[in-house]
Image (cartoon, rainbow, N blue to C red; front, side, top):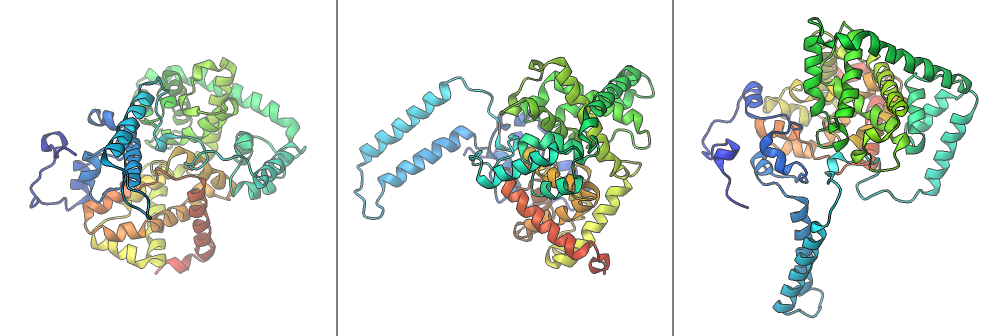
Length: 461
């Protein structure tokens, strides 16, 4: 790698420089892990590699092309060296293989391709290894869901029980509408309810949306307009003007109808899972690159209205997270601190030694429901369980956060100062996560809930 240029990275190479000793000093010297500056545009689609220091991770990006090339060359080097008694190839043969590999890769990269989607931005709800053929067990689960949904009155308790361990993609949209309380359990009433609620939403648009330029609402709309392009910036779908206009309408109408809280940064993230799930009804694959304008206008309107109502149902249960001073988040972060102090005292004491406050990293975990820490595909899987759980978003989320923190205990204990520890907590390496990792996280969260939820005195000193 070229030597680090201090002018570009605004970093001093003087090893005796004083490290930030407070959170405010640290916050002024770093950016949010998901913010994308102009300087970082070239590395937007690079794969994130774990590193031992924040300087290395920010100054040495690896492109997908260089990684692929290195993997091929490493494999050829392995074949050209002595191993397990194989015949050693000559240097000239090895060089020919290397040159051939480079030529092949160059040809592959010269072909026209669709925009490269970084792994963190892939929405497919399968693991990173790809979507395997449906197993017998998965087909049986899908058939059970279809049977429940086709009954005249869907048994919601039975639906929640089956949804806890994940909802098949084919039936996720209607299942989410039911579990969120947007659709009635009675099948005959569903079409009428959908028609009425969709008309009601667009009635709100006609009534309120033109007021976005009024003096009373100008600041709210301006903040929404600023935040929307920052929502999932790596996914082309969310950079389409048509999609951004949909999000602006949803968030503005919600803010107008909920004056106690209004719009708060972070709420914009909560629209995306619903939008993607309801869009997936009409897209077979590659949702990340789908052109929203190719859908009929009525379909676009239905996706928008359903996303609004389901997001509203979610926020009804956690609105104290977004009222003045955000008391709900303050309470949850304090509860997380008490819980961690009981289940892993070493981690808790380590935070105290490094002078790291839970609010400095866990505020975002509560405000955005871990959406900034996990790929969107993982959030969708997580929300399958949240909607199946009683008070999943408001109560079970606490135990998921505790399990998520303890998952990284080894890495946390290896960081010996404030800056490196907080950088780790703001850039946890979940880029390769899929269904399996989320399933393990939820199982540990359920164990913690079983131990502590019904006996809160267990985690209070």
